[in-house]
Amino acid sequence: MMDRGWMRTSTRHFKPYYSPDAEGSLRLDTNTNVLGPNPAALDALLTSDGLEFNQYPSTYSLPLRQALAGFYGLGEENFVTGAGSDEILDVLFKTFTDKGDRTAMPYPSYSVYDYFCELNGGEPVLIDLDEDFQLDVDAFLDSDARMIMIPSPNNPTGNAFHRSDLIRIIEGTDAPVVIDEAYGEYHGDSFINLVKRYDNLIVTRTFSKAYAMAGLRIGYCACSPEAAEMMTCIRIPYSLNMVSERAAVAALGDQEFIKRSVEMVERNRPMLEEALQALGFVCYPSDTNFILARSPVDHRVLVEGLKDKGILIRDFGHRRLLENCVRFTVGTDEMNLSLIEACEEIIG
Ligand SMILES: Cc1ncc(COP(=O)(O)O)c(C=O)c1O
Image 1 (cartoon, protein in one colour):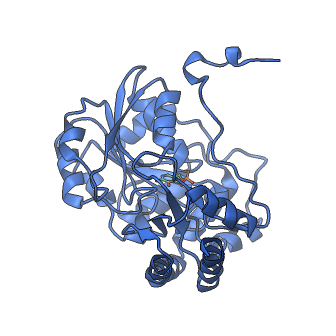
Image 2: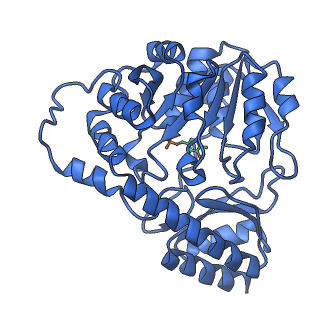
């Protein structure tokens, strides 16, 4: 039997990422857009005109970077694209950190940060959030980190961080500060226009959440042209494929769908919160399309019970500071009703 001796020593303890058997299930576990695939992207994918995939895509996604530049009022030199914002996060570690370098990140937060950090030989410095799940700004500034990585809104807690705290961190260090705005459309606030003011600010975004295109794997970051150029030397050429890029350009042009998606969440989130609270859940304030809640019954019983009824939610109940907590993606009226009915049956 082959053992892990073949693996790089520093990564032998790694486990595969969350990968449930989701066949036929209602997926309220990954915070994707529940309204279905992005319609403008779908239209773009249904025409093959000019889709010369016998050729490579644009090496560094020029058409998408031009579209993003127009959308945000920046230059194409301010953007780097990738196969999902996860690729961008990996490229950030590869570009800006050396073996043994410290990267400061909040805890609890998106687990992929410490994974990429360790994968790239770095040392994750996890800084606990306070009881309101807000940032300990001084701890970030005192962390002697080579890079700082913070998602806002945060996953899995759902809250956005105070803008003034994030500004203090950006202004208080020369290290690159990455603000991950994977859920930025739902929050409605962004740091992207500040990349013109702060050289050390890098903002990542994705087409996987509000844009309803997770399966196409498209992400990007906005930053200074200098930082973008450094990242471009490290990012794998052609990593964003031609089909996804075409769909992303089309999707940017249909802001009506994004507005509809965000409004649906704004309408349904308080209703879901209220229904969960009535069942005994403690819900944490959310600025995005999911809710973190402390379960009134054992988290494993709830998550497994829902799974048996064909509904997937995400279990965080075994993690420090998130004891017995689970995360629900906000669904449509119909989805939320099925979810609440199923919870009711399990909680009894
Ligand atoms: C905070 C955060 N950042 C980044 C990502 C990755 O998104 P993508 O699909 O663009 O790789 C996620 C996905 O869940 C996320 O929650």
